[in-house]
Image (cartoon, rainbow, N blue to C red; front, top):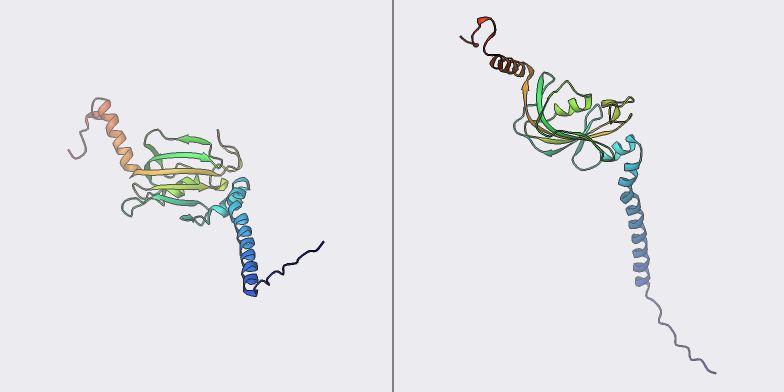
Length: 196
C-alpha cells in the first residue's frame, strides 16, 4: 500500500507571533478579570476592614478623617450645613452590611444632630438641605462592640439619608413652647405673645 504524503505549507513567522501574542493577552485578561471580578464578592464576605478598603475605591465614595465613608446620591441646595446645635428633619433607612434593614422612617423625622451615633452625626454635618447621601459607618463610629437592639456587636451600618431641613435647636424649642401655650388655652401667668 502506498501512502501519498502531502507536505504542509510552513506557517509564516508573523502569524505565529500574532497567535502567541493573542494567547498571552487572553491569559492576562482572564487573570485580571478573575482578580477584579471577584474583589467585590471577596469584600462582601470579608471583614469590615476589607469591605471598607474595597468600598473606599468605588466611584464617588469619600472618606472622612474619622473613617466615615459616604457618597452623595443627590446634591442639596445652598452651602449651609447642620451643626451640633441644630435639629435635622430627615428621611432615612438603616441597614446592616448584608442588606438587612433594621430601621427606617415612615415620614420626615426630627433628630438632634448631636443626638445620634458619632458616624451618623458626622455624616449629617456634611449635607446641605435637600441632599441625599449614603453613609457606611464602621463599628467604632456606630454601636461598637456592644451593638444595640437588632444591631449585632461590631456591625458596619449602611444608611441612606435625605436631609429635608434643619433648624437651630433654640428655634425648635421656642416653636414647641408656642404650641404648648396654644394648646393650653393661652399664655401662662397673663403674659402676652412675644413683642407685646
